[in-house]
Image 1 (cartoon, one colour):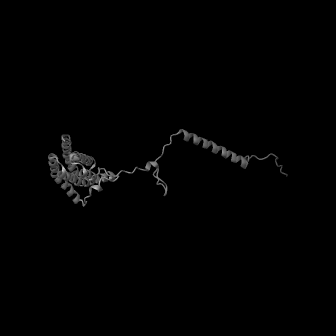
Image 2 (cartoon, rainbow, N blue to C red):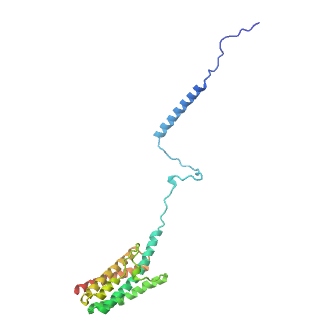
Image 3 (cartoon, one colour):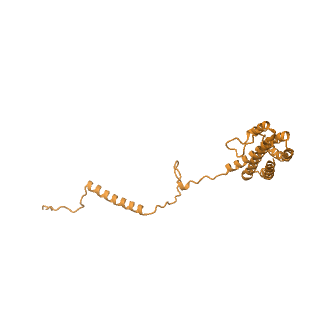
Amino acid sequence: MSVVRSTRPARGRIGISGGEETVRKSTIIGVLGAAVLALTGCSPNYEEPSDMQPGAGTPPPPSAIMPAEDSGSGDETTQVNTDLEFAEQMVAHHESETQLLEVAIKNSPDDQVVEFAEQLEQQHGPRLEEIRSWLRERGEGEVTPGEVGTGEDSQMPGTDVSSELTELEEVQQGSFDSLWLKSMIDHHEAVVEMARTEIDKGSNEEMKSIATAILDSRTTELDELRQLRENL
């Protein structure tokens, strides 16, 4: 018996060409990408904390960088330098003052000026010995008047009175007391400024106590010097 074969095509999947498959995948990816972008643009950007350690060479996030703490060592150093500078300047100022006092005792025609200069010479010595002792305990040497108060970082006025001494040696006798009193007033005002700087910026209690005593005594002496100048 012969078998009659049907001429109808068999049912099966319809084949999709490679080009059609590529187009279909691209369309799906594009739709998904647009959806992700839309969600990202509308949603807040919260950073989720992670327990994972960053890999070697990876910089930490900004939130993990803590500001360095100020140790305060700069201020402490400044205070120590203020104490030392005050002590050295007071010794140098005392040397300059001694020269001014001696020239007045030697050359002033006014007995009242001579008596006042002798009084200051006796009163200031013991206080300066305390400062010298403080310096010796710290192994610090003394400086000359021309070496202090001249640096850019100095907080204290200068102490050199060589120009004033020259003028006092050359001035006419009748003008000596007026010029000497002016020099002493300027000198005392500088010491008052130094004492205030030490009180405000120093850290050593002994030096601050000495500065307070010097401020009180020199303020009183300033008033006396100004009164002497008015009485000339």
